[in-house]
Image 1 (cartoon, rainbow, N blue to C red):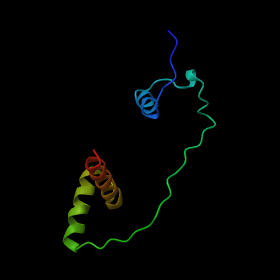
Image 2 (cartoon, helix red, strand yellow):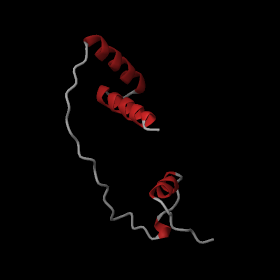
Image 3 (cartoon, rainbow, N blue to C red):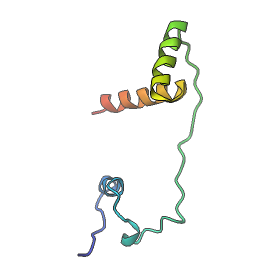
Image 4 (cartoon, helix red, strand yellow):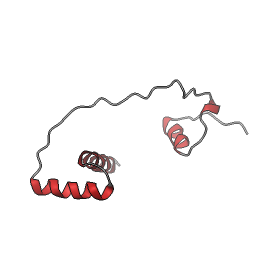
Length: 82
């Protein structure tokens, strides 16, 4: 059975996430470069008790404070966008 080329970017992403071999569709993944998002530094002030709470949550997950904050913000923003 011949594989069909994905019709949308979402379909391509879903098939990639499912582990499908995309090279058989003609993609040359060895020479592709992933464009990194541009970063912008921001400063946020937190009360000490919130930092302590964030640090405990981060430690439970085995990540650092910044990763926890980014993860939670990402999840919240995506949930609000739906």
